[in-house]
Amino acid sequence: MEDYLRFSLLAVIFALTACGYYFYTAALLPVVLIFAAAVLITLEIFFIPGFGIIGITGFCAGAYGVYLNPRPDAILLALVPALFLAFLMVKTLSQTQLFKSFILTSTISADKGYKATSDSADWIVGKKGAAVTDLNPSGKAEIEGKRYSVVSDGQFISSGSEIRVVSNEGNVLVVVRA
Image 1 (cartoon, helix red, strand yellow):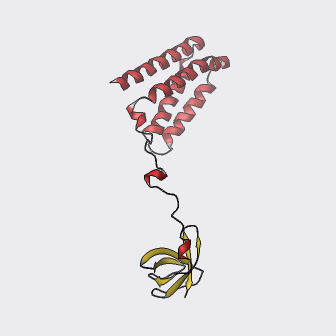
Image 2 (cartoon, one colour):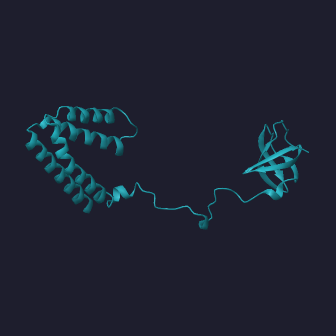
Image 3 (tube, helix red, strand yellow):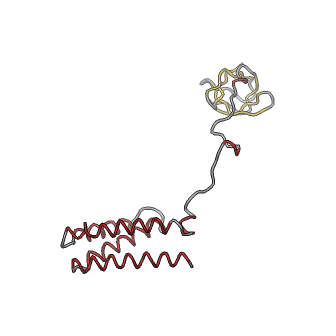
């Protein structure tokens, strides 16, 4: 229920801002177009996947609403409440459960066992094994009873051939026919 109160408060603040703009300029069409643009773009961002006709229509409606504005200084005057409204929306909406569901809160760290690269495999350089799959140029090989993803030095090595590890370049084991 708390989220509905926050959304209602934001709607009231927006309505008061729009009414103030309307009474200052005595032109309702630009206000309606800009409000429609905000609604359409919000629908496009949060509810309709992709960037399509709804978002483009919203952008065009907003641009036309600004173009139709009879007093250019009214936009500057409306900018202050609009910035205040944007600040309130960020502070208020960030507390709602809906917007919290968009934020990733779990972390991945080394102390939990996640690593970007594997441990150094320099010990394996010079070891011999057998190609489990065809290496054309990449494939699988078994070295000391363990399977590894390997890359040949450019030549085709058929499955079952004896291979030797010549280098470890990052996470890539480079092998040649033994």
